[in-house]
Picture 1 (cartoon, rainbow, N blue to C red):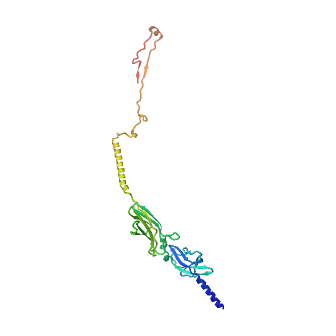
Picture 2 (cartoon, rainbow, N blue to C red; picture 1 turned 30 degrees about the vertical axis):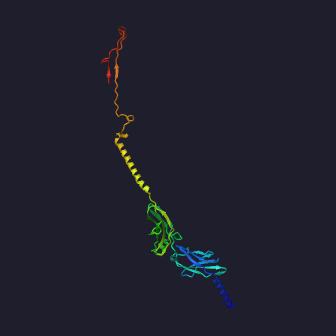
Length: 308
């Protein structure tokens, strides 16, 4: 009897377990972001684990009602792993849903980002950002850690907007490139990344269109004419200035003109003066009485003269 009871209980448990289905797993892996997702028809709690492919020891990583689990943090890009998930509801547990996963083989390569175009005269400069890992490191650096031949390259696809069937493709090794295109033409561009060493290629970015610039016909005619007028005007002004210099009377520089008020002659003639001396004899009292008024004597050589 006890043996029959145990068999019956085991059958009930197996039946209950069989009634709770396993989750259906899908892996969403791009660059170094690895998210395991699953569909489930009823509300349940889920346990998600991972282990190295050669190990039987599993690590818990997610538990709850969410129907996805992010494995990005613990998994290395070159590792080989076993991922598993089971459901738990109403005291029952489903079987483990198992998925083998190798990031460098199974993870896709993300598309470039931040595509930008700058139109010029008969040219378009294209710039973009290469795919990036979750930690902000360029994927070209991640790939080069595991293969010396892992070179990241890009394909630039461009076409005239009115002729989408005539697409052209260029292979680039840099994230900046200038295309020579006809002026006043509208072109659309897309870019994708690929690595031949890992056999990976991304999808194309959404298309981005721009119109090339170029000087108008009127500007191409007027610009040479304006330049000609400027040159002729400059030559005329130069000729007029030269004629004025030729017919202008010559004058001494101001530095050579002597100001008569400011500069006095160095040598001044010496002035001479003459002193005149006259000797007049005075009469005595008797002579004055007897002779009457006396006349002033005429100076002579003895009595006066000019001495210089």
